[in-house]
Image 1 (cartoon, helix red, strand yellow):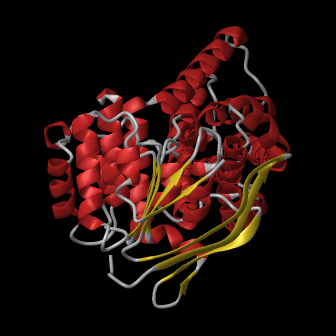
Image 2 (tube, chains in turn green, yellow):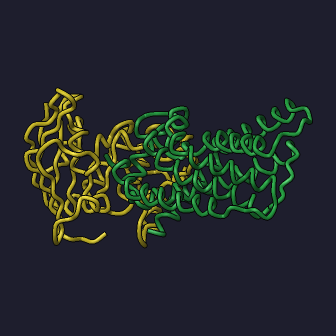
Image 3 (spheres, rainbow over the protein chains, first blue to last red):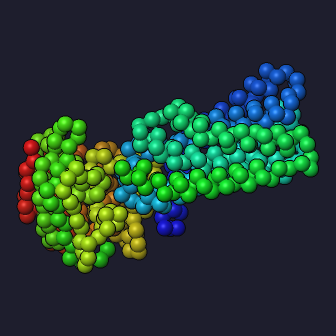
Length: 219
Length: 204
């Protein structure tokens, strides 16, 4: 199975980096919204809570453009049947999840420094801040992989994906916003319980997705 | 791929889409060395039947079993089947070699890939992205993808689609060369392809 996962991942990264469609759209969205926000703010400082909300809004919508792409592309290009006869459902899910985690990591690495620079965010607890951003990103990528598969099989596109993902991601976004705001405004009061919840949520949703994926993919 | 004696048995297969009953009580029994041509007009259910036999679509009623030394679990059927059809598409952004390497399993596939690329006259286009291929070249590649792992069961839905006379000859000669060692099922309306098979059913 590990060999299958590596084979699928190699294929997915090759296809993505030759077209760079999803990545380009996500990064363009992040750059445009951050720049527009910075210009609109005109140097007026936002409170940590508002900064945190804006950061997660940009991360959420930047990522949503790309996270569904991994399955929707297979349906749009008619390659899902080829994939299905070539690899096991378990290896497909594992490779798509890893791909989405990598995609999310790239989005976070682009959006977060850009946002901090343009919005002049000063972080007081850098470790807690990094943990909050990484934990939230992990939860979003883990939750959206199975939903991307459902949307692709339902013949839906990106807009449907964002809508059906929102209720599932609401607690993740809420906690990520709170913990990120907390890391921006005060040092030494890190609530690691929130990070543990985000990690547990990611693990739980990944386990459920792993069990459900075979039925979504084959039926 | 091992050379066990394979059997494929379908009993009373029926399939409906809404109120449209497409397949009704289809019975098929094949073992290694036997081949079947499935013919019929457009919309008669040829592709649906082949997808059911490959385990890609669930039948409405009836049963399908694949067996070698023992019955093969449905989840493992595709490891023993080479399938191609109009709904199969290779990755446009990848080259022929990359698509084949993605589809291959096990050792010895590299040498087999070289031989098949030569046999189907794609060797000189091996490093071109598939999006630059003609529809006939894509069809040749689809045939290679279905046979790269030397599966004991071959299910080919309209294998001659988009092929020129040379391409059709190549497919026919390949089928002719392996039919004594495999179960082969072909959906076709091409009389030449029908004659390759030891038996046939007509739908519709």
